Length: 202
Image (cartoon, rainbow, N blue to C red; front, side, top):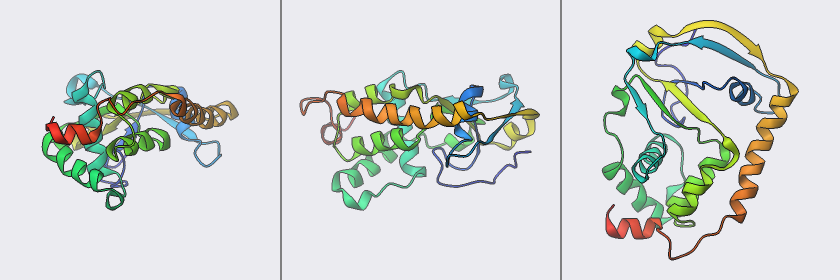
């Protein structure tokens, strides 16, 4: 039974219980470290929850997603002056100040590859256009994280699924394919980069 207020503080959206509606992805995510894990199954009544949906269908969504990553994940900002400025900018401009007041957050899962793409963007290595395309690579899936006591009180355990060898293989393949495709994505200095965004202030 998930316990409210427990867990790692430096996950994508902070402390919470991380899930997905895709059973195969849940099994894949349980296979980290080349082991065959277990995916628990839960039932949740969404109609009673206040959901923050970072659908990444717009520029604003992507910027808000990055802002949450910046305040929760561990970035080596000291290695880049641009990244340090970007951190302050995203916190001021795009961080949803009361995001912890929601019951559940839905958005991309910043696994190793997606996290690397976001890091490249805030260090001015790639443009916003390339980042947007990169976030569609690998079909890495959407995650949901329960962050309120109310959400935790509504979730009900309904069983589990044992991961199979195909899930372990697929987990490694998705990340590999995303990184491989990322290297071939075209980019241009003329595209919108973080340095230009900081200059314009939007």
